[in-house]
Image 1 (tube, rainbow over the protein chains, first blue to last red):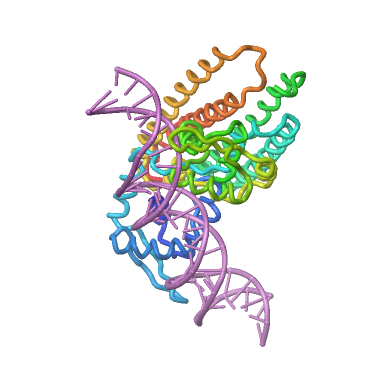
Image 2: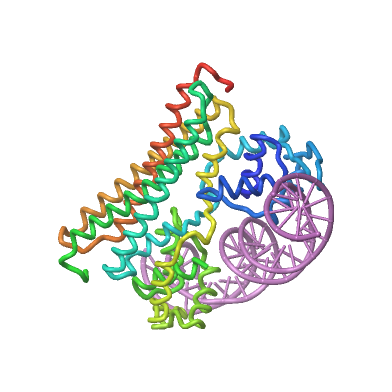
Length: 181
Length: 181
DNA sequence: AAGCCCATGTAACTGGTTACATGATTCT
DNA sequence: AGAATCATGTAACCAGTTACATGGGCTT
């Protein structure tokens, strides 16, 4: 049940409403980590309150409830962070396609791989821009930048996709004389 | 509905039974692409036959049915391969944890990051071994090795995780004088 | 004959998505 | 006044997991 721990992690940073949490999922996690809609988040927050992991720390306008993490919640989050990974099976459509490349003929494979490389390079460029923006607005003596860490991971990930696709193209090039092997 | 396309991709390689397909998911795809159990695969194959994407090409012992991809199935697979990615949301527990690092104190962050680096390095070593085994048994004049492409991706992916984790540790080191920022 | 692997299926349940529904506040 | 955004919720549905169930064929 990773949704629960994702919510605990976000609330560990600062207390937030279900609405805020929905946006955070959309903006920061849904890229390559996890995703959830509000219809899943609101009921889960209630259940987590029942389990003592979070509490309502404030009620504002429009019936909004601000949830905060409890000590018990923090302990549970830490326990999860240190537990072995591996339970939830991965779902990565990009990688799935890459495993299926062999179902195409050579010409299609080249076109598709070229597309993948270009798309990944596009994402690299955007992330590089975003990171340099972050760094411009961060004083040199600030503490460790966790948002920066995540962005760096994303950058390296897309760079990997691009490099890998270019490498596949070069391997395919070696076989251009035997088009049907 | 990626399960359907994963099955089409596997059947495009060669006709197989539901049982075979279940094993292929386990052995090759469940690492970082996709996963599915037999209880999901058997009904889906039936539905796909209803939709004309696959057909039973052989019936063997123990009531086994060997499915093969149809022309219609091949066309659908190709259509999917060239369609924009992005529909199915990612689920990657490792990356989720990495986004949650900031919820730990500095000492815990160091220990956990060190663990992540070591685990990834272990996987790199195993994959490197597997790849060199593959290459030993492949004649130099063989066609493009798609299994090799996938393994290469895996290798680079775990190498990325390891490198990133080591980089985070070095960044944290820069801040060891301000333990609570 | 016993044990293992092959082989297929269904049922109950859980997690996740889409659609429906409502209303308050803020901005223009 | 109208539109956009804030804010929460439920219901129906779909995808995926776990558990239950059965039996044939192969090896020792």
